[in-house]
Length: 423
Ligand SMILES: Cc1cc2nc3c(=O)[nH]c(=O)nc-3n(C[C@H](O)[C@H](O)[C@H](O)COP(=O)(O)OP(=O)(O)OC[C@H]3O[C@@H](n4cnc5c(N)ncnc54)[C@H](O)[C@@H]3O)c2cc1C
Image (cartoon, rainbow, N blue to C red):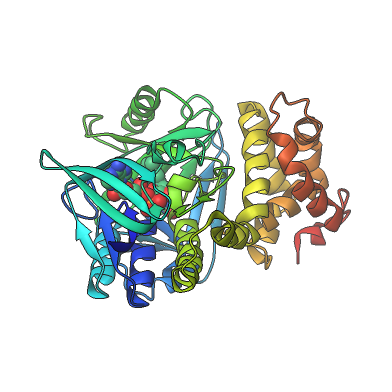
């Protein structure tokens, strides 16, 4: 019997596997694809904090120290720093690197191995798989569900289901005249979300978008727009699409089980980025599982520490991000244009850039400060208050209340000067 079975050789799964194998535990990773990094659908952008966390071992396609935001009617806000703020990682290579690292510590990777079902017995977990047409059974003292956003395993094991999703669609294509990361906001192209063009190498770029539904038709419309602008030669390309969870599971642990990464919904609700949060939560999971294995106690009570650990780090960030996501999805293009104008007229972009709260990975601080700016509050106040008082029609908003009230109290609603955003 293994100590731990990990389902999924994505970043979160391989990271847990590496940490536990390094500590001497017997770890088996079951992955349905033929190798790590196969069939990923991801732009691979991470902040400098995540890049440093990876120890510079990830393969970088490009670093980015600037970004251009484009409003629905074409207003531009450009942010630029002296040093790289983000790195475009070669995502398949990242997955391979993390899996090889885990294997080098002794984790056993089984590929082409689809996990169909997992069940608890009194003392351990039994995992039923199909590998190249053959049914197999694996047993372990504990199970890590790192099986991404579409897995049904969390609900079948009593951890419930991810409650809110968007869909991301992406292709890699040659693009003319876009030298830096470009993010566009337009309800016509990406209702409630945004599109992106991320240059990689030479003229190649990752072109993508997020929306709630009909990703392929929205994506086609975006490509047609780029074609009309002379940015791309043809809209013919291979499009990948994948779910993006926007809220975490209510509970990410159970007897003998934890869920990490996209499977647990540990994703930034603002952008849908999940690599770094998945890695942070994987570290917390590995640490708690290590103690549990040594203590011979993988009970729900013991593993609950995992949940309190990751929520302490990410909980308020996720709540604040989700509130902003819900508010943003209620804005029409005119209001988004007005927000761009307000940002420019009040130098909020410059103030944000110089604020210590500015971070690629942690958005809550800067969002709280931005919402508190009188010019922004004038445009967003009614929507935010509507959500907080439940008038927005989304009962989930109530959960954001505590965090947001706390933040708004800490950073008063009517800071008079532009210094309000400086921390
Ligand atoms: C278009 C798009 C762009 C994105 N861009 C970014 C970005 O720039 N930066 C960022 O941080 N995030 C980005 N994300 C999100 C990011 O891709 C995910 O957050 C990240 O991949 C989550 O990692 P994970 O290890 O939790 O899950 P995954 O990477 O999904 O890995 C899960 C693994 O489990 C395997 N698996 C699933 N079910 C089973 C089963 N039953 N049996 C065996 N194996 C199974 C899968 O094959 C997969 O290998 C993007 C997402 C999309 C859709």
